[in-house]
Length: 176
Ligand code: 5GP
Ligand code: MG
Image (tube, rainbow, N blue to C red; front, side, top):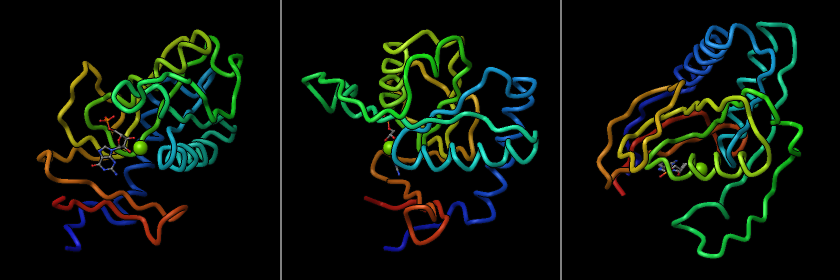
């Protein structure tokens, strides 16, 4: 099935503009802030927000990519901790990190991301931004910035399309 469209291009753009403003309001600017996108689509969301914040504030905000596959407790038994990071410990040391992902579900990916970051250095703070919170948390993790709360059943799946890697900007709910 094609599924049901929950966010179109305009809705996604508006949500990201709102989140950019919320980040600026909560942090009173972006001094000492860095954006970290969880691959794959979290990276593109972080890049879009970085562009927006750059437009609004007139100063660039540093951004980096994080791959947490090897830190997932339920994905990898052998914690090889092979990373595809684009940054070193000085990038996050004493910084306020705003972590980005497309969909928040059990919270295990975010926990893994926090593990990876804290292994590298000592951030001053970590905040979380997601395009979609679909519920069903298994860990005490909540996002600071949410594009849209979409209550789901565990049998449903949220399809996030972003033009950087997909044919369009769209959030669709589907039965698995
Ligand atoms: P969690 O680790 O919180 O269980 O799941 C979040 C991670 O899995 C995110 O990186 C997200 O990309 C992916 N994910 C979990 N559920 C969905 C979903 O319904 N749709 C999409 N697109 N990704 C999901
Ligand atoms: Mg993901």
